[in-house]
Length: 391
Ligand SMILES: Cc1ncc(COP(=O)(O)O)c(C=O)c1O
Image 1 (tube, protein in one colour):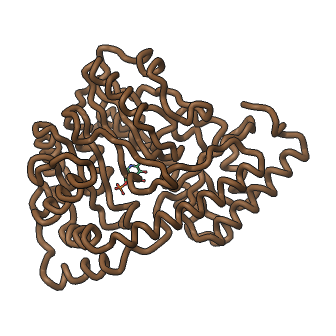
Image 2: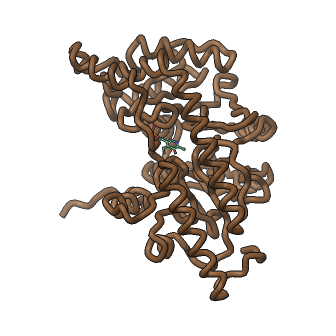
């Protein structure tokens, strides 16, 4: 038998997807484990997609993205960030954010390189790094530090092989939003050591209250942004995102990787993306409002139950800390019929936490929290946990 390549053997499919497969069909389970918006995309988006097919937009697109879409993205990004992006030199349309992350990683990493990952972090960053025969280097973050990495912890892990730092803000799974000061400190750290800074902005638009998402994308040539319409416009199945940077050489490389990996993003998907950017601004306001309501409701309930939790600032995930000695996700599924993701899946600092997604219908969220509450009280009653103690 010929042998498989060595690299993927360490990689595993995301456990979130495995859990999802198991619970999808079972309506008796309150499913709080998914990162897929619970709402439908805006009507104008679906209509544009259908019309694109009727109009014969069913062929290959330009590998860097449809010109109209790139122009629109450049216009919107330039206005939002206060810096001029060229539609052809500074961005590439990708097959969702994941394809963007993979293409950036291929563009900047050589086998053996190390990537600094402040964790808990979205699992694909760990696995993509491994797939490219590179090493994910975990940088711990804690509840007490708002799940933001300290510069001392980053400094302590730099080696001559370090090539890139990843920032996911707003964060998945923690919901943390990096403030201006932290982003600036990390950029200074990157410049001191000659590192790339990949800023995953999948949840850029999903921030609450007066919280601002701060980013240096466009302001320095070592900074690369990843965007997607998956979360902001509930377009996970359309597969449209983009990579954006002021670094033209980097963008050329990303383009090569997109071209020789997926050829181009979906053509009707890109027509739908134009409709999303042009015609669905209200939708975004509404959806962020809805997420905000669910997040506040769930956060208060989880705090009442006794978990350590910050009031949410961004994304649609909550990451409560518990003091249970074990991974409680399988027991919550078995005994309480509620699906959550165990925190340790997102890196070692996730031990003693679980992630819930608030991107679900309100009755599902209520039922899930009722069940978690009852189950937790039972655990306290039999003395398995001491709510006042810390892990
Ligand atoms: C942090 C983060 N980045 C990127 C993505 C990529 O999403 P997509 O490939 O659907 O654009 C996700 C999806 O869950 C995410 O949570």
